Image 1 (cartoon, rainbow, N blue to C red):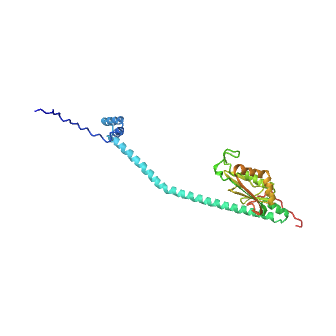
Image 2 (cartoon, rainbow, N blue to C red):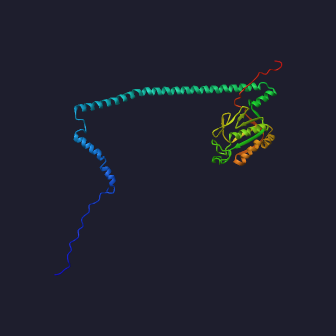
Image 3 (spheres, rainbow, N blue to C red):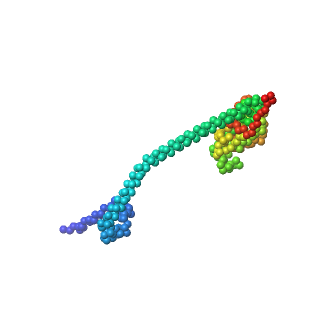
Length: 299
């Protein structure tokens, strides 16, 4: 009987399953050979020679024991000294803190005493300027800033521009320490005050700070100082004088035109108005440089 030839069945050889970490051969190599071959060979050589591991002789063991005892002794002594000195250091620290607090309190007390004496001297100087009662004495009190003055005058408000925080653009007013051209500066207030004096003002104050012949308007960073007292905008300038005439003369003066130019070119905000009554306080301290006793007839 003929039939179709029988072919032996094809059997596939089962493949060996791959390791999950087969793709990380470099990492496996590092993990399996963490110790360099050179170090491993040196350790094996020492072990074979009998020089590796713990000391074998009694002398070597004794030396190791002595070294361990000395190390333990040093650590114990250091810990004991730290424990003993800790209370001493804490006590010295508390004493230092107490001394600092005592000296700070003493300095504050001396500052208060200086302020009280300064106020007393200023009050006595004002009384000395007012005791005469003559017209000349009254004029001296007004010009020196020793007495409060009120009457007709002008109110001038100078303020930074609305976008002053955006800084300047390299204009002629820009400096390395004060680059914002929209900010009012000390020299601007100097010109304003000098212009008011020249226009006929009898007494001037900025933000309640009386100005005298010895007053100084300076800058410290971006702050304006009047007699070393910092002021913040807006700057309100009060000037006693012939109100309407004083306002007109100031606006037509070079300093008034300068202030107008600041308003036009840099956006600095200004407003001026004639007032029927403005009050300018007395100066906080009056310094008498030269004084002579007044001799009156009949005394």
